[in-house]
Amino acid sequence: MFKKFIAVFMCTVIMTTAFSSCGKTIGTETSQTEQESSKSSENHSGTAPAEVNVPIENFTAPQTGDTVIEMNIKNYGTVKFRLFPEYAEKGVENFVELAKEGYYDGLTFHRVIQDFMIQGGDPLGNGTGGKSIWGGSFDGGVDPHLIHVAGAVAYANSGSTATNGSQFYIVTGTVWNDAQFSEYEDYGYGFSDPSKEVYKTVGGTPFLDGNYTVFGQVFEGLDIIFQISNVETDPTNDKPVEDVIMESVKVTEYNGEELKWYITDYDYQEPTAENVPLANFTPPEQGETVINMKIKDRGDVKIKLFPEYAEKGVENFVELAKKGYYDGLTFHRVINDFMIQGGDPLGNGTGGESIWGGKFEGGTDNHLIHAAGAVAYANSGATSTNGSQFYIVTGEVYDESRLDELGTYGYKFSDNAKEVYTTKGGTPFLDGNYTVFGQVYDGLDIVFDIQKVETDSTNDKPVEDVIIESVTVEEYDGGEVRWSIDDYAN
Image (cartoon, rainbow, N blue to C red; front, side, top):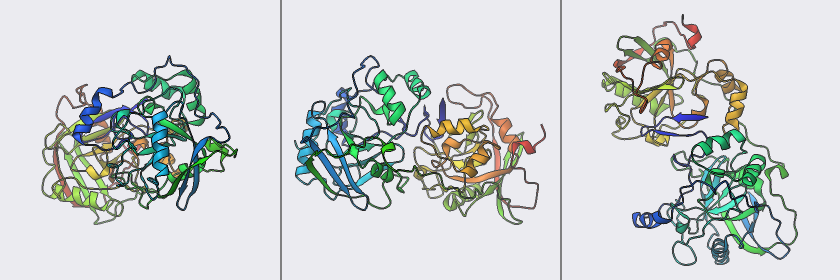
C-alpha cells in the first residue's frame, strides 16, 4: 500500500512513519565538504541483500564478565545494553572509550520520534556536533548479523557509515508483517528470511539495515526507551520539549542479571490516542467568520474556520483571502480518493508564502482530523513550513481492519476519530503532520467532483485548469450545513 503525502515540494513514499526519503532517516548534520567526501562510500541498497541468510545475533546472551554499558537517564531509570565487538569492533571501541571519558554524561536525547527511535550523544544538543575518539568521523561498517530490531543501538551518520561520530540512537520501531516487507521489496529493498522472522515478532526499523552501524542491544530498560519515545516534542525538529538527560553512561561488566530483550518482557502499556471531542463538524454560529470559495463553472464551496485550534492558520488564510491572493489561482494537484490542492501562485507546487512573508508554524491540534472535507496547509516536511498552499480532503471510508492495518505502521487513532473515518471517511494517515484549520460545510459535492477530473499522470495536475475565481471572507448567515457527502443528492 502506498500513500501520497502532501508537501509543497512533493514526496511520494512507502507508507510508514519512518520515511527514508522524507525525513525519518537517522542523521547528523555535517559540512558540505564532509558530505561530499562521504558520497563514495554511501550504501543505497536499503538493507542487507536477501540472500545473506546469516543468523541474527542481536539477542545473543552476554557472558558473565562481558563488557556492557549502563546508562542512567534522569527521572527515568537505568538502561543496560550488550556490545558486539565481534561484529562492530570500531563502533564498540569508540563508544566504550567515549563513555570512559565521561563524554556522554549530562548530554540529552535531542531527537525523539515515536515508533522510530531516540537519538543522543551530541554535545551541542542539536544534531550538528560530536566526534569519535580518533578526533573526527570513523567508518564503523555494517554486519548482517546485527539488525535494527527494537532495542538495537547504532550510530547516526550523515550519509554513510564513514561519517560515524559520537551520536547514536536506540530503536523502538513497530512490528512488521509480510505485506509491509513486500511493499518495501517492490521499492528495491532486500531482507533476509531470518531478519523478517525477527521483525515480525519483536519489531524494529528494517529499512535502516545496511546503512548504519549497529553495535549494541538493550537487555534491561527497554520499557524506558519506549517511554521516552512518547514524550512531547517540538514538531519542527523532534526535540523533546523537556530535556531527557543522560546523567551518566558507564562501562561495566555483565554479572548474570536477568535478560529482558523484548518489550513484552516488561509491564509496559503502549499509550493510546487521547479521545478528545472532535471539532470538525461543529456548526458555525450566526455572524461567525467563514470562507466562500467560488470555483469557476462549478459553484461555491463554504468553509468553517477553527481559530480556537489553529489560530495562525486561520489568520493567514483569512488575510490572504482579503488581499485577493487566491483569486484566479488553480487546484494544481488533484488525486482521486485523496485530496485537491491549490493556493500556489506559480501553479506547480513550488510557490506561495504566508502573510508574514515566508513560512510559518501552524502546529497541529488533535481536536481537528483529516475527515472528508477538512481543509489544511500543505507543507514540505513540517508544519513550520506552511505557506499559502492548502488542500481539501476527500479520502475514503475506512473499515476497522484498514485502520488496524495503519496501526501496524505506528499510527494511533482515538475512538472518536475511528468513528468519523468509518462513517464519513477521510485520510487518517495525515493526522498529526499537517495543520487542519477548516471544514467544508457546503459544496462538498463540488470538491468530490473535482477530484475525478482528468489529470497528468506525471504530476497529478488537471488537464483542464480548475480555477478558483474568488475566495471571500464572509459571515455565516444561517444557511444549510451539509458536512457529509451523503447529505448531497446524487
